[in-house]
Image (cartoon, rainbow, N blue to C red; front, side, top):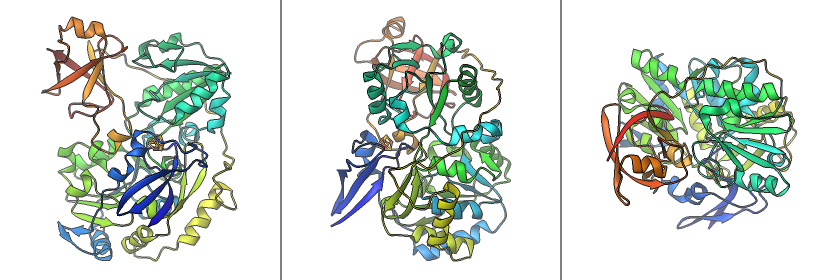
Length: 469
Ligand code: SF4
């Protein structure tokens, strides 16, 4: 039986756990883990399902990792390749990958549209212990669905007397007051407030600027949670690279200037429309588990899953955590693709040097600069549609994993206005497609449908829709 001390890849919270190989994968809680004290959310508990085995293939035929990596090297040599990684792997692999991806790197985040002096604030969050001591917390997220382990910290803050305001479409049990996202000008913040938002590939940059600006004007602190295990490092390490946004990547695939897409431990099936992915001549995937994209890929370079890897992950606080595996075959595969031998130790030294640490110690957080950013002008567009479907992005959605949340939530008034029958369904129309879904009544704002599952009719996080019985 092999037991690995590892980190959950479900989001950037950095929850520690043990994975046991015992004929099948089993989980054990790691109470000493500084981020989560052993607790896991529904996604963390689903990790055995996430780690579906994957095999190396070229055009559907099974092969060895080395042969698949050699084939990947051939197919990226044409000059029209883009490289995508959201940051779901070790710092050491990401460093090597970013070198390989110099010509066209996409981390998914739209840094280009945001002022450079805000990038560090967007990349590295604050220590979770500071959440617990905040006096006033303003949530621009749904902690229950999106980043469940932050809830422990919010409850600890509440116990010490903190007031929690949520700027959300639904009344959240943890919040003392709820502000409609359309009315954020009514928010009362001070320098004792802490704003918790998130930053991800579908973030509306005007909304991000607006949240940054609210914090700046009130001198409140601000922290952004992120959806991928090593997003923090992916953003820090790529800060001087010319990163392309996801929207730019989609545009370039549509124009035909990108014909080959190399994805490192990242499944873009949830983020790039299927018809756009279908225009690529080559989809190359290097991954440690099967997913929707490995079924579509022309070349799959299958290496060990994350829990077996040797390397470092940086969580949202900026905390460096070591993975407890010993495999470097992902790095070796990248070396074959790059045509050079990659040494783990020298990459590891570079990671530590860039963090200013002598050793990876999960119980201390390296010092990060938190430069002030200049005032921002945001131009928020009001949602003009009468009814909107709001996608509440959560780990199951990012990873395209089956979840049982196959319904939408709406207010009692909205359901009454549509004369919906209890236990019945609602028809939702957008983009010329109509779907029929079950619904639940919840304390949601009028004319908003909340969904924790993607239905294939969405246009980003807020989709104007027509609804009927
Ligand atoms: S909060 Fe994030 S890191 Fe923690 S168990 Fe859930 S998905 Fe995994």
